[in-house]
Image 1: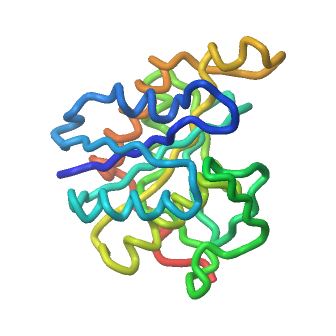
Image 2: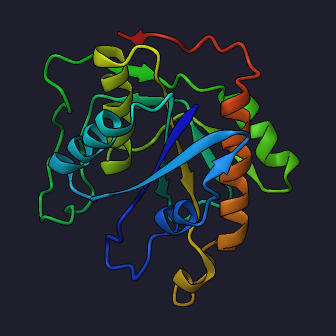
Length: 212
């Protein structure tokens, strides 16, 4: 089994992005599955293309995308990706689309096809705070989640896909009063636990198909 795990480059004036830092630190094999790692640009028009290239090159069974959620105090396992871009800040190429669809002819939304409740439980069992999230926002993180699920529906029907948001790491909040953070080692540990649950697939999930 192959698992493609992605993290994002830095953006928004930060000097690091814990999503890629944690993904980069994951072991190369988890629960017998080969772990393939890819860094994704924080650019609306490029994120999905880079993901599609990685999927084509490796043909993974599972895609797990990871992104930064400043202000979060736990790993947030996303449940749905929506067909909307509404950028609060420009991306790394200076683009700031407002209220436009990701795909004009795409479904309004897709439910994640990974065993998300089992993933949350496994993360918690590893001693890391985790929650289900019902909104991945409307920035590049949501775009990548939607693109992964759209790609699976259109071209890779056996591929499961999902997304986890992770908090800032401590060095990012030194000048951000009252902003939560999590140690990079704990984020990495939580992601590994989530992948273990995803590989085992020990949940009957009802989140298949699209939301119209």
